[in-house]
Image 1 (cartoon, one colour):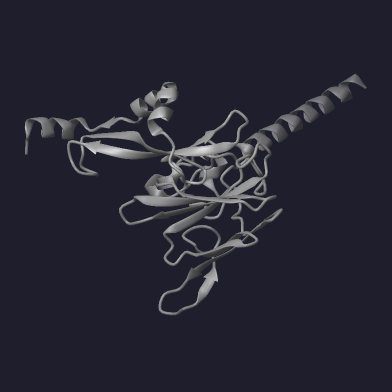
Image 2 (spheres, rainbow, N blue to C red):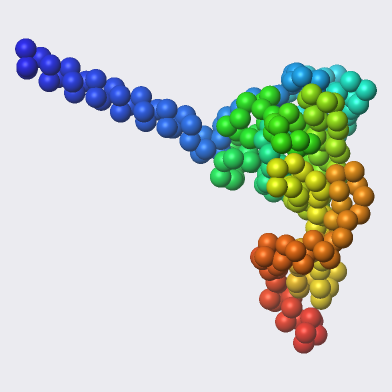
Length: 279
């Protein structure tokens, strides 16, 4: 009997290791580089919030529409709460949308202004079989209908992120946030990938305002300057009313100063040419 149990134990142990390895591979963020690892969100209903999307590829010269998954797709969107419904159309394929299913800021990565990452996975370059993730959720490990705290300390909010870009690789984004219980709505234009806005929360975790950052450049024109620095440009409450930016910077110097310092980017060759006026 002992001789029979030993091989059975080895087989069971091997199967357990193999299953664990397969599960680990399946949940690995590297899977998202080699192939699409989630599906575009096209239907969603959470409380008062509803969302619908039609993804398509429109053939030129009036050739009609064909189905499209999420790579270079165009789309028609309808989303919002009763009385505040948004209709958007992507006319040329240079736009993307993501469902914000986790706390802001989502900190997506946007090479060439295209949001290709997930907020809770390490950013990886897109593989040959992956997509631009048009229509996917922002947080990979959260379900699409996951809500978060924004207007109140209760997690009752959900959002939609719209990104647009041009041939130069620069772009803009718009963030919409809706309270699924009260129907309250917040909208903000937030620069490339939403990275030029920081949301300020009070001690209860409620968003009370936001700081808008702008990239300043020195010793040259934009795209040809020697030094770039991100600098806080305005501080407003959630209704868009101006607050004291100087007061915010002084009272939060321990976070503002390191952020400014870490954002400094220098092009040494350009700087030397500017200083010494080389051709």
